[in-house]
Image (tube, rainbow, N blue to C red; front, side):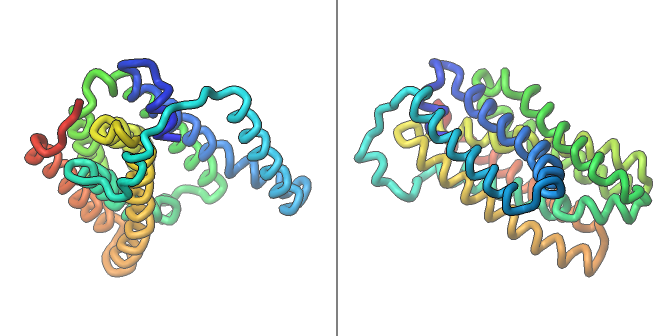
Length: 264
């Protein structure tokens, strides 16, 4: 949907269009798990999965009937591996996800270890999802005006807040406040890098979107693995600091390699 949103967006509103897609994703994450759990308890998991299948089918019908067709460059579509700045931008997004998920994968046990009652954990996670949604909505109107600037602002904010988590832990209320701000700062990460990448790879935004999603998923998986080793060997604070250091690398590459990341 990243590439499609970039193609149908009005001129000068590519970033807002991509952020709008990310908003839908955030709403799905925030509402999907509690709604799916409630539905599963009410009607059973088989009917829940069947209901999801029907919803996906309806989405397909709506796409075919309501969305406009777009032109596509067949030759550009043959470029399976992005070159130059494109792969670098996708890699920077992956580094941010890697550093973030080094700690976020274990945010639930961290909060419980800090004294959060188990009954309040679901509410806390929903609040963090809402924070991410707010972060996207705050940044979205400005992405088109300052596409590169947010490749500096967003990771810099994440580094500061993730390091603050290591300082706040295990004091519960300061920890909850900082984690809320931290998840809010992470909300626009995907939109930030996608916005820059589809501008650099504007001849084939679908492939640009595919690569950035692949890198981000790689970062999620590797972050969980790395964070697990750090948490078991050191502490949650250690996972936070090492993750912040990884994000700082993405920040440094963006700052010092700006000329290689051509943005139009």
